[in-house]
Image (cartoon, rainbow, N blue to C red; front, side):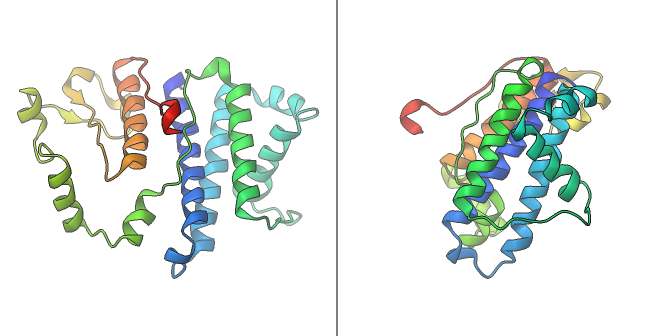
Length: 228
């Protein structure tokens, strides 16, 4: 797995934290949803993917040695192995408030980035309280409403690659498909702005990763200090 492919898993973990931050700030507005299941799905995704980063960056033997002295790594892998990858009978869940949960997840993700720095590119974790799907639910944005919003926000929204670039190319959506692509020049990456600033940031970072995986580039975007 290439460094930018590993980075995609880290950024997905970051977006899981974004989602939990969004839930924390909008509990009343989405209280009619099954928030327990939604929260559990975000946490499962976080821990499974952070485990992928560790497994692709540090050998299992070295992980085991590190866990003897590294409590953050040990607790992270404990959550994965005892609860999210498996359901061990001796696992005892802990109820914690949103603020503590978010702080813990950030600490574990930042620690993962630090431990695996030799295997990943120089990316930033720009945390924003945002969940793409829950935002649409909360604001009653249906597919037809979204299309009209996009047309108003971005006049070129409905243009095809052929109209924009002067040639026909296929869209590269998922980095998992990179192994099936023989000629990257036949593909392009759509960098969507999204419906708001937060979504634009997430979309642009995802697009940067796809560009880097497809064309072996090293581009990235992040928040300016004044935006943080």
